[in-house]
Image (cartoon, rainbow, N blue to C red; front, side, top):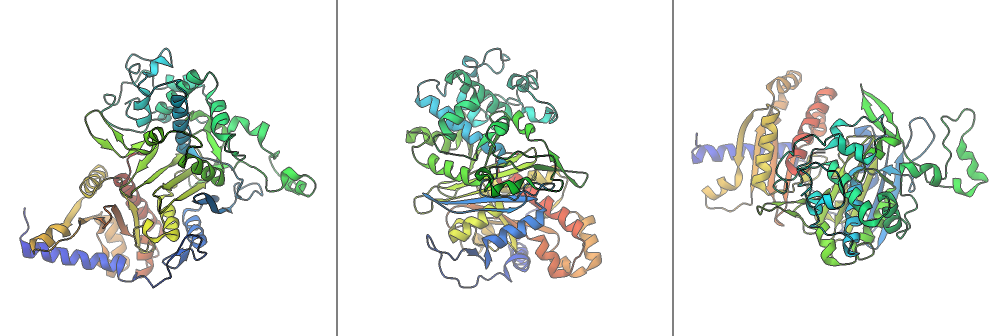
Length: 538
């Protein structure tokens, strides 16, 4: 049913008022001095970086977190927060090693391009040229399609047993008999199997183990002393980690032995099982061959990232562009992703993120010459999305790197897609979750109806009456901000943002003390936003 102009305008005005109540009415930015390169005044909407991190750790109940910031060619900020072990007296530090999960793919991509520059493989090579004995459906898939995650090969991670150690060929065996999910080169879907095949191709082309090649050509030349694979811990880590510290702490050895001063230590990863944080053995990461098996510190990742920005790792600009550019499929479709990296409409912005057994990781790069800010965040809890926190931190360094919204009031992340596609993805996510959409208000269309211009701005209203009624039964006033809404808009720079009311702030405003319901609603909203804004489903 089409709405008449007056009805549409009334709905539009009501939606704007409602969104204002949720997000903007109390967030008029206080005047601040401009942040310039090297300025010590680092805050966004009055929140310092340390406060942002501390609040995030508390909200998500993280054991520890490590952060490093690049303003090329410097790393002006590197810090650890909390503990890397809930059982041992080990603090997050600048040298703490965390499993970096899918960020490992970025190292794999660099290794491929290094071998391409050495003339030892070509991106058009079929994978069967480097890896023998593959299923017929895999043999014509190219190196480039594996890098694009456009192979269609099933992801072996769904079949992994973390208690078991797999050889690379055994990882392939987990999905060898499964049909392709789609015709190669026609779609994009994240698959750890793609990265494993690339790592095996690297071994064939280089004549050495994948991990040795990465060490020789990336870790050692960049002097990444806190970067290694789990099977190297015993040989390279400085600390002998006993099972416990009865009566004494091995860290007392720093008084007499220099290697124990600010030591290189691997963090313990945790997974929530039955509401409890359960440690995950570091060996579990070794199964993510070429995809998530590397361990590093946030500072080392930042140093490596500076090297990647120039010719220290990949010599030719045209080859670096292969890593930095969105995927163009054979049918002309452009997908804003490449081997773990995802790209938004912010010029020169790229990010790689995800989780692995016991850990979550995030790396972003603002590569425009007038920005050159990179944010690395690593934590030892699985399943934590660090995207919003990282963008807040970047915004503290330069205000126009973020959405220009106080995220204490409105949770926002940038979409990889345009407004129309982002809205469609939100609706698809809601349909799959069987959550009804009550209304969609297109403010730009309403503006056009009265001969005004407005960039794309759309509010989608949806919700579960059972949940909303439960909250309104405690205080009916919250009905002004229910059902839930998600706002999609395009800013003056052509960036698309997805935002929704910060439900913790909303609950505090109305005195709602049902933290479990608010947490569940926040998790749902976050999931919908993540699904809409990102290429990969981690």
